[in-house]
Amino acid sequence: QLVESGGGLVQSGGSLRLSCAASGRLSNGVMGWFRRAPGKEREFVAGLSWSGAITRYTDSVKDRFTISRDNAKNTVYLQMHSLTREDTAVYFCAAATKSRNYIGSSHTEYDYWGQGTQVTVSS
Image (tube, rainbow, N blue to C red):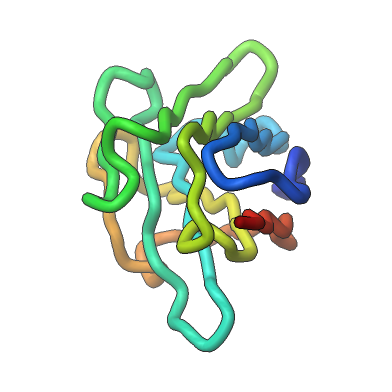
């Protein structure tokens, strides 16, 4: 089970931190964040390996977002800075339990999903 939190309404240029609490087994692999903006397909945002040593970001969030994990707490975070209206979306946490280091960008490579948390950036 994955449970996201931390979404909300923020002004353009602001910051938010999303959290994803995972049950023990789900946190033993790659974890990722995806988002789905209104009228758009779900897209990969960021992912990291089991150890946290390997990360991957989509180009539009590089240098603005940081993904991290605390395995002792079974929690994954997405720190978001310099938010723009284009970041408005429902953000989903996902787990790829069969992979410890390979970070896929396709939603088909993740086998568990959270319910999503809304992030709205106002101008």
